[in-house]
Image (tube, rainbow, N blue to C red; front, side, top):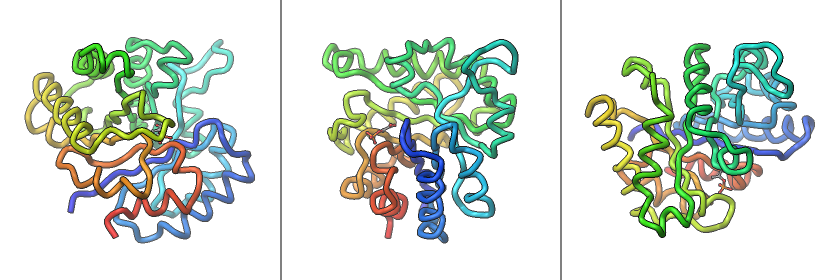
Length: 250
Ligand code: PEP
């Protein structure tokens, strides 16, 4: 069985104490899981959660990162600061960043290149809105986000990048793309990667699905050939729902 990559995005939830408590529970319950696992608490909880995750099989991720190395950038967090806090993965271009904070493909690409430069594993989120899907623009939207997001990434660096396909209309709404629909978009992303790089790199890319993933639908999504894992929002906030998603194969 391939190794699936299940990541939890805690968004703007949990105090430091609550984050530590949840991280401890996850470490205990996920020991021995064959999935690759990441959790992304709020910035304020990163350092405290890092101490809990030390020596475990759970990676620490950040939900965002500033586009600069350092300097006069009020409110931003640099890659070096994330690494200092124990972070090894960073989620970039989440639809909430794209739509609520107007992050452009250009900005996301700048962050992605900076993350790679600093040895952080970027998870590049892509996905269409309902209007874009219904307007027949799904493929062009996803293509642009992939092509622009990966601009300047050499093929040798591509293996360090993860892509998460998250249809915006499925995030936090309880609506999930059918496994067939999600698989078809993942296959399309691989076709774009093949055009940009090579068949080998396209096949090797880890592509997570995100959008209302729950214990009840994880196994059928993961059964699809082109789905290599999940980026989980709401259901990652409780061990009782995140653990069965990570261990969907059991
Ligand atoms: C997400 O935030 O990336 C996400 C997929 O959220 P949810 O699982 O709650 O839909």
